[in-house]
Amino acid sequence: MAETGEHTSAAPLDGAEKPAYWDAAVAHLVKRDRILRKLIPQHPEVHLSTQDEPFVTLARAIIGQQTSTRATADALWERCLAACGRRVTPAVVAKLGLEGLRAAGLSQRKSEYLVDLALHFQERRVHPAKWAHMDDEAVIGELTSIRGIGRWTAEMFLIFNLRRPDILPLDDPGLLRAISLHYFSGEPVSRFEAREVAQAWKPWCTVATWYLWRSLAPR
Image (tube, rainbow, N blue to C red):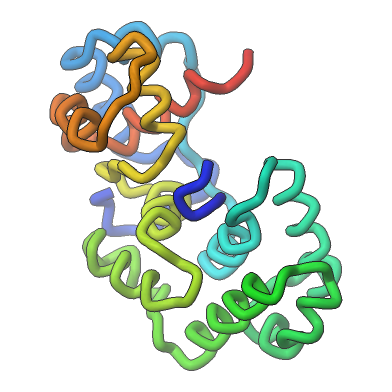
């Protein structure tokens, strides 16, 4: 993930399990949106899933910021994994510190961000155990108090880790590109225009966004 680069379910979800709202969301979107009516059937038997703990998700997001390709981000993450002994936890990252993270090949800025993330978790300045029961903006507020985490990264966390159903990441270039391609014949699209298109998706903006991202993936 890169910062603007390229539920409300209260209970935590099993990572591989389909979100309880998914089928209802799909039925709504197919009924309300002519573009999604065509796109969704092209991706059957797939749904949003998550695998990582909150700290790992956020650490990986920070490492992936401002990288030119997914392969570059994956390579940096692998170096971080190796430096952490394959266990990326607040304690391990804090113990590595700036020097250890820099030695693993991370930039000064990303190393600083990771240490700040670790300290927020260690000192309980954020409350991951409560996030499943907090509303979207409250979680975003906690996350953006951490250096290196802006609104886009916080929204990606809400989508991919907490799997909230109604997140519309208007700073995401992939979403804007998909809306441009499918709704505006490839013409550039503003945030206002994207928000207008998304009115038909509520309260399932996450699901619509996910299928639009899928539409950009190579077959």
